[in-house]
Image 1 (cartoon, helix red, strand yellow):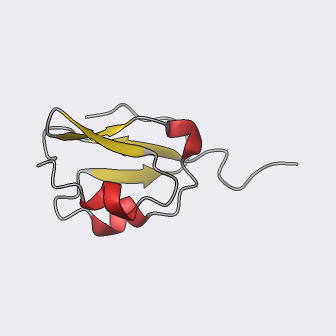
Image 2 (cartoon, one colour):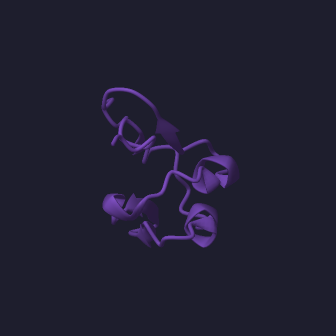
Length: 73
Protein backbone atom coordinates (compact mmCIF):
# COMPACT_ATOMS: atom_id res chain seq x y z
CA UNK A 1 0.00 0.00 0.00
CA UNK A 2 1.40 3.37 -1.01
CA UNK A 3 1.59 6.31 1.37
CA UNK A 4 0.28 9.58 -0.08
CA UNK A 5 3.51 11.23 1.14
CA UNK A 6 5.84 8.80 -0.65
CA UNK A 7 6.79 11.28 -3.36
CA UNK A 8 6.94 14.42 -1.23
CA UNK A 9 10.23 16.09 -0.37
CA UNK A 10 11.00 18.92 2.06
CA UNK A 11 13.41 21.43 0.48
CA UNK A 12 14.96 24.70 1.50
CA UNK A 13 17.01 27.58 0.22
CA UNK A 14 19.49 28.37 2.99
CA UNK A 15 20.47 31.63 1.30
CA UNK A 16 16.94 32.96 1.81
CA UNK A 17 16.71 31.84 5.46
CA UNK A 18 17.16 34.58 8.09
CA UNK A 19 17.13 32.10 10.95
CA UNK A 20 14.02 33.63 12.54
CA UNK A 21 12.89 30.22 13.85
CA UNK A 22 9.22 30.60 12.89
CA UNK A 23 9.29 27.32 10.94
CA UNK A 24 10.95 25.54 13.86
CA UNK A 25 8.32 26.83 16.26
CA UNK A 26 5.42 25.57 14.14
CA UNK A 27 6.91 22.16 13.25
CA UNK A 28 4.88 19.57 15.19
CA UNK A 29 7.47 16.80 14.76
CA UNK A 30 10.60 18.83 15.55
CA UNK A 31 12.05 18.04 12.13
CA UNK A 32 13.71 21.45 11.94
CA UNK A 33 16.33 23.12 14.12
CA UNK A 34 18.24 26.39 14.06
CA UNK A 35 21.98 25.90 13.67
CA UNK A 36 24.50 28.62 12.86
CA UNK A 37 21.64 31.13 12.49
CA UNK A 38 19.90 29.08 9.76
CA UNK A 39 17.08 26.56 9.63
CA UNK A 40 18.34 23.02 9.17
CA UNK A 41 16.24 20.02 8.15
CA UNK A 42 17.79 17.93 10.90
CA UNK A 43 15.41 14.96 10.91
CA UNK A 44 13.80 14.65 7.45
CA UNK A 45 12.50 11.17 8.29
CA UNK A 46 10.24 12.75 10.96
CA UNK A 47 8.54 15.15 8.52
CA UNK A 48 4.80 14.50 8.09
CA UNK A 49 4.47 17.10 5.30
CA UNK A 50 1.92 19.19 7.20
CA UNK A 51 3.16 22.34 5.37
CA UNK A 52 3.31 24.46 8.53
CA UNK A 53 6.92 25.45 7.84
CA UNK A 54 6.11 26.38 4.26
CA UNK A 55 3.01 28.35 5.24
CA UNK A 56 4.70 30.22 8.11
CA UNK A 57 8.13 31.04 6.65
CA UNK A 58 8.17 34.80 5.98
CA UNK A 59 10.94 34.40 3.40
CA UNK A 60 9.64 31.40 1.42
CA UNK A 61 12.90 29.64 2.24
CA UNK A 62 11.37 26.21 2.86
CA UNK A 63 8.81 24.27 0.89
CA UNK A 64 7.37 20.86 0.11
CA UNK A 65 7.40 19.50 -3.41
CA UNK A 66 5.73 16.47 -4.94
CA UNK A 67 7.24 14.14 -7.47
CA UNK A 68 10.91 13.36 -7.95
CA UNK A 69 13.53 14.81 -5.67
CA UNK A 70 14.68 18.23 -6.75
CA UNK A 71 18.03 19.74 -5.88
CA UNK A 72 18.26 22.08 -2.91
CA UNK A 73 19.04 25.63 -3.85
